[in-house]
Length: 356
Ligand SMILES: *Cc1c(COP(=O)(O)O)cnc(C)c1O
Image (cartoon, rainbow, N blue to C red; front, top):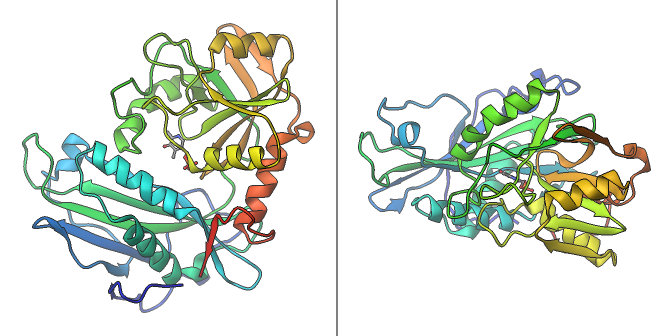
């Protein structure tokens, strides 16, 4: 259902670009749909949202987000079922996390139901851009940044909230190879690791690049204080299956991003009767279990990748090769469940999907 009470100015493109798209060749995040939604914050309130043709922004050189980094974002996916109905997966969780990220970064919050409605409208106007091919989806990127044209350190008075969408294919096509990082850190207790803010990514690029030079795709971050505990994997949360138990770092610290995909993986596994432990996970515990061959599955969970199975884990001089992905139990089961649920192929027993 679309809520007609929220008035959006709409300026539609004269001619859609959708027919020019090569649906078999969709690099992640490089193809953009026809429209974007823009809503400005000024004079202490959100102004009327507008949907307009996707295009460049005109920015003042002093735009404060560029200098001081008040910038937060979300990432979610829309899919279509066989009848052309659009499905969104737990968008209220993204709305809630966005509000939390805004609070931490001193940015104005968007009421959560307004956030969800704006996402729906943005997806609705470009619903022809939602790929119907299996494993493909429309990636939705809501974000907000500070727009004061002022060089001075203080929370900005003006902001821009934008949503654009990108049709995308699969993110990782092969099992990921990760390195347990013991020097660099992503987030420290008391910092902004729980906020989905741009700077967390900026800070992670250099360590990730070094790991890539060593042949890894990604890092597994450990805690900043002691490098003793596993935290997450950059764009994904991480889960392990050890002795038949699904083990994942608890999110009570403010150093771990609270992922919708991981929360859903944990909830569905529990629903199936799988034993799940959300707790502190020591690096040494994982390494010992790897050496003893007791890690039967390991996977990242995040919207972009959905479930990304880990093929190899590097720790200091050791390299652990996990079982072939075809033989994995729990990660394949969760992956199939989430893909089928998001594309409307199975009944929504958990009440996670909204349709319009
Ligand atoms: C977005 C993100 C995730 C995954 O969250 P989802 O809600 O599952 O997409 C994990 N870690 C970090 C650092 C992230 O920014």
